[in-house]
Structures are given as C-alpha cells and as structure tokens.
Image (cartoon, helix red, strand yellow):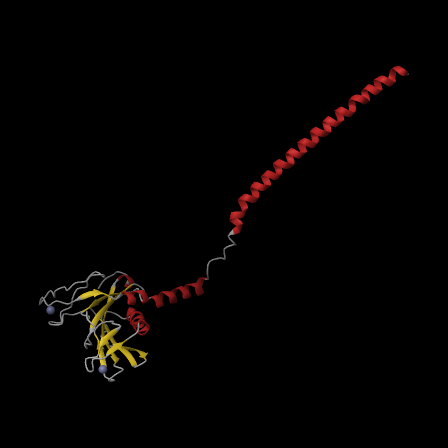
Length: 242
Ligand SMILES: [Zn+2]
Ligand SMILES: [Zn+2]
C-alpha cells in the first residue's frame, strides 16, 4: 500500500471488548477504552482499571505490528479482573462505514470530528485515544466509531496505533547492546574539569620557583659583594705593612 516504514504508518485495528458485571455476572460490552460503563442489564457500574487496559492495548499494539494489512483473522487477548476478565477480540484493518461497509479514510491523529462516508454520507465519530492510555502507551492514537458516553454497548470500534511498540523498541535496544556491546565507559567527569586548574597551579609554581631562584641568586651576589669589599680593604691594609 505504501513504501513508508511500518512504524511511520497509522495501523488501524478493529476491537470488540467485553467485561463481566460484578453485580449480575452478565457480559458487558465496552464501546471504547472507558474506565467505567453502566451495565445495561442491572444498571450497576462496571469499572476497569487502567492497569487492566494497559497490557491489553500493549499486546494488541505489539502483535498487530507484525501482521500484514491483508490479515483477516480475529484474535483474542484477555486480562484477569477482580470480577472475571476483560477480553478483547481484534483484527487489523481500516475503519468501515456502519451503513455501507465502505472503508473510511484515516484522519490526522488528534482530530475530534464526525467525517462522512465518501459513498453514503453516513457520519462516523472519531476522537483521540484517552490521555491515560496515551500516557501508558504513546503509540495509541485515534479511535473510530467508539462510544463517547459510558453506556455499555456491544459491537466494535477501531483504534489506530502509530510508531514502534514500546516493548519492541526495548527488545531492539537489548539485542543491539548484546550484539555490539555498550559504548566504552567514560572516565570520571572530574578529570576533565580538574585538569585546567592543576596546570594553572603548576604554572604558578614554576613562577614562584623562578622568583625564589632569582632572589637566591641576587642575595648571593649581594653577599659576595659585601664580603668582597672588606677583604680587599684588608688586603690593601695588610700589604703596606709588609
Ligand atoms: Zn449487571
Ligand atoms: Zn457509507
């Protein structure tokens, strides 16, 4: 379809999600990644924690990354919950119009809109993946035909992923490190910062030594001259006496 790298493309996946109502034990459909929906059978709230959602989406992101666009199989990923389990059935493929089943074109991630089907003008709602999901999984981008409210609802919706799945990226880094090793250990930082002051001190020491040497030479010269004068006077004084 496109020659762009896989990680750069938007990867749409169709989802159908079901949890169990803790009150009536009936299955409850989730029309979006919602933290709470109202059970349509008994009216009780059904809650799903972000910690339950995150591994589900991470697994779908990672597994769908390798699947070709033509893959038509429906796969299942499950996560245990206190009430039973959260199960997601997923299949790769672009979002489709609910009325004519025509394939819809993808919008720019971040869009909140109801674009029309090019064929039958039926609108499909699209909005960004919730913030908590994007925090856990930055590759989760945009939802299509997902619920905007928290009523329980069966049927499917779509999510697009974009970028290399985080788990895959870590895997690559570990593989690269194992193959070529890490970079050489850096010598401790102080060496480079300490070096200039040390050389400056050395230079100062040379100056001090040179000055001391000059003083010593000067003092010796003075001493020799001071000692020389009386000696010659003495010589002069002694000689006439001979
Ligand atoms: Zn219920
Ligand atoms: Zn249509």
